[in-house]
Image 1 (cartoon, rainbow, N blue to C red):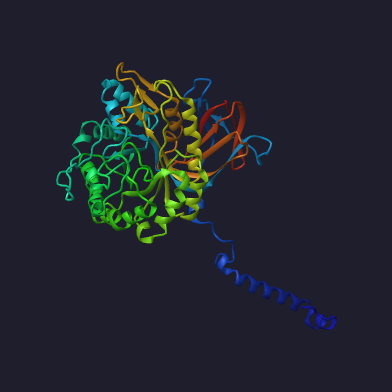
Image 2 (cartoon, rainbow, N blue to C red):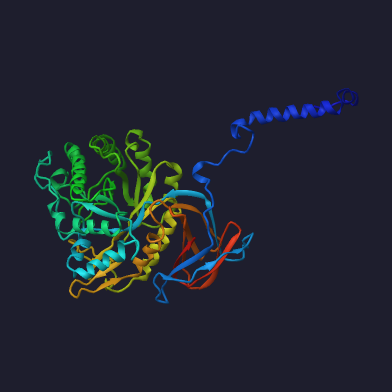
Amino acid sequence: MAYSSSSAKFCGPSLLVLLVLVLFSLASAAHAGKRGQNGSAPALPAETAYPLPPFTQATVYLTARDTGERMKAEPPVGFLDWAQPNESITCIMLDPTRRFQTIVGFGGAITDASAETFYKLPADKQTEILDTCFSPDKGMGFTLSRTSINSCDFSSGMYSYDDTPGDTALKQFTIAHDLKYRIPLLKAALAASQNQLHIFASPWSPPAWMKTNNAMDGGGTIRPEDKQAWADYFVRYIKEYAKVGVPIWGLTVQNEPMASQDWESCVYTAQDEANFVRDYLGPTLHKNGLAGVKLMIWDHNRNIMYQRAQVVYEDPKAAQYVWGEAFHWYVGDHYDSVQIVHDAFPDKNLLYTEGGENLRGSAIDDNYDLAERYGRNMILDLNRWSTGWDAWNFLLDQTGGPNHVGNNCQAPVIADTTTGKVYYHSALYYIGHFSKFIRPGAQRIACTSDDDRLVATSFVNPDNSTATVVYNGSESDFDYYIWLANKTVELHIPGHAIETVVIK
């Protein structure tokens, strides 16, 4: 509004000031919903506003391809003042006050093949493997492991817990097969981990008599009339394992439900999976006091995980039973798919549940390429909200087996059952750079790299230590900095190397 000179004289300066104040008050009231009750800026959400943990020094643990160093501890380095990172200097920037997902764990699968290999070794080698892989004090401190319901390709033969056709009441159900090797190893691993191991189970196939193709292999689907019996089967499995001292933390509905394989497999469309969870598996778990078991869908590759999640999560009656989505790496990287699932369904969790590689040459020979593939994938999945990362078989024999279909693989640990010698490959140490230093309950924090040669992720642990994993896939070795809260520490990384930087 324009004022004439006469009206301005009439109003006077004090009235003009009063008018401005009134208008400002009205504008402030209009925005009250966007501000605090006292007119202050809106408070940060509780999940993203945290106090800065203490930090005085950084200790680097290094694994490098060309030097032979494996998780070598370097002398601690102190922090120096540095108010502003320089974009021309390689730097990893951290902000522990901004936090994201909480970690479940890291590790590798305990299959029949792992267990059979383990029990062919001398007792001292068995103890060594348990300490090296599962002990948080002596070794890598694995905190996550997958196992199978019934047999999988990494079993010496095909079997189920109830091979009696038509036994929908599961009167002949027995886990006797698993009591010989697999359950004893799971219990030993739990003990070595100081009971911090999260075990989740996946079926490769229901018993043949429950399927449309009358076989555990070759795909097929569940017969409609046997869906309730199959849901009951999950419950029976969990309860029988609990009786012998193996708690099942989580379940996936089906391993790789779009794959019709030469080994145990069963096919579900996205709608089939939603229907089975909604009408059978979810209600059956809840009715049997197992609502706390973490139920995961998909358990297949990243490439179409959004579409699979969408179908289940947009059905609220199915979604209510689902903790999150499991995924693998076998068809391209597709890290954007992981991020998009989180962005679209932020109340659901993500967990990487299988990654292996077919045998190339001798299983005994170290495969550093596999180690680097692990490291890069782990960092990029974690930065897209995965709550953990579980490799395929943690232990195999000198053939990359045993495997009843010849689908032999690499593994982080290889044991020659003819000589008793154990080979700890670089892939084990790469997993260890996460599992040993990022513990269950750790929270991911803001972490960025200003150099394309480095990818990194960072977590604050329950003990308030900060663990930052930095991977250099280039040929170059160079200095870099870690910066947080106007402080910095200068570090060095070789080419083709991974470092965990523990800040306390």
